[in-house]
Length: 188
Image (cartoon, rainbow, N blue to C red; front, side):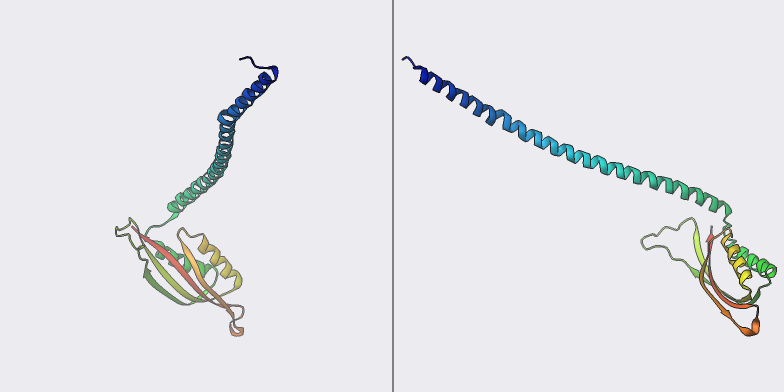
């Protein structure tokens, strides 16, 4: 059977159309889907990379802060008097009250034992005690300022819990100062 020219052209176009459809359906469309999937994976990888860079910068910042705090702690540990804190506090108070001409009216120390956090049964190498001191004294404003500055420079932790300053006409130029302090004592 001999095909006419028109039938040959029709057959050629049909085979070409089937070839194009097969190429599109079996190769191009799966490759296109694969390319889109890979682009999404690249976007996710970029996001993870950006997150890891942010975390890395955060870790570097934290490491720098930790090393700074460790240096401060070493310096503080070198200055700390283990077990002698309250005695040193009282010596400082006596020396400064004499030097600054402050008049001590009353001094009331009260010791409280700091408890361990729940869940920790082992005894730590250091025991901490907190001594709360309530003082009433007569002082000038500049002498009080110098005394509080001196407390800040002590080689152990002293916190000011309360400060009340009253002016009384009968005691001029002195002020009545009620001061609450906490001294942290480390026992080895």
